Image 1: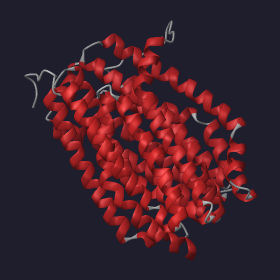
Image 2 (image 1 turned 90 degrees about the vertical axis):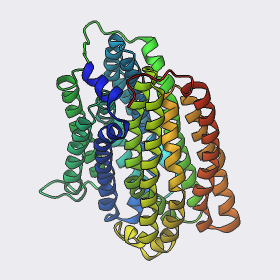
Image 3 (image 1 turned 180 degrees about the vertical axis):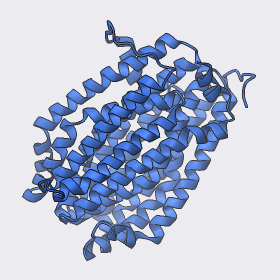
Image 4 (image 1 turned 30 degrees about the vertical axis):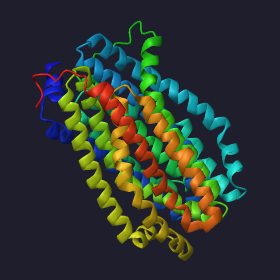
Length: 456
């Protein structure tokens, strides 16, 4: 217990944030890498295969959203109880994390069996795209248990100051996926050529391997947590408090799925290639956003712990450093997208038409990055401070109230290239709301906290 208190409660904030975040950022970059590798290999099959993967994003994002949101709820509550030195509650949340992983998986197995094909036929009549998409998406959803255990297991490690082990977990899963991708997709070394189904199979094998490693680290290296499933019974209060924090995160991510679904519908009015461009963008932008999400993941337990310990200065310092580093990352991303858009698209075997519409798309969309970075950090702060509803409102307004209507209007008035400006406009409007919420949260929650003698 003392070691965790030293890490989260007394280590200088700048060093602590780097220590907590850097392993997560590296692991998330590796995650982004194998997501991109999937699409690079699939683009060698055909542009329709790439479009199918793009159309599958809403379902995939929803599944990941449930995993991340459940993990956020577990992590924030666990870290807060750790700061308050309530170890029985800490262990209760750890035990429920495994139970909730299994329940989440059962839900998505059901969706994978009964709802994947109608999901694709609603979006397109292209039989080849439907077949590619169904083959890929069904395997990912039916094999989702590995994803949920991996994501939630990593959150347990992060929330107790063991981010380095979550990095190892991600790296192992990513490396296995990258190795298996070409073997399964193209039928190397005597394997049958499986196409998009092979990419999905490689993904879930990597996730199950990572899940096993995450469980091993939590059971053997995470001495803060004491797992015990003897006479385990689900506790309504634990589940309720988990999703009071986690549900807004789930909805936020799921709203992203609705947004992508809506954007795909708007873009399909122009061409399937336009949806492929959006899909490529979301794969590549993860190289920029994943480090910021990793930074945010490292920041959440720090803020939650010090909120529980009522240490005002460490909360404020954490948010300052978080916004500084997020802004630097996003500025670098904007520069890269504006300097090398054609080279980025050519990685995915882009046609001339895809390059024609994709180059301006990447340049325009990336203009919103710095505003997005600040939004991400402050949204994480709301979750850490028990104001997750603010995060939910911001996400709904940003992606549904602002982005989709603006994109639709711009598409009708000015054509395809104008659609991409909707990202910048909606992000700026959302940031105004975020800042207003934070001013209120700072006044009502952070300022009244008693600063402790241990702050550094």
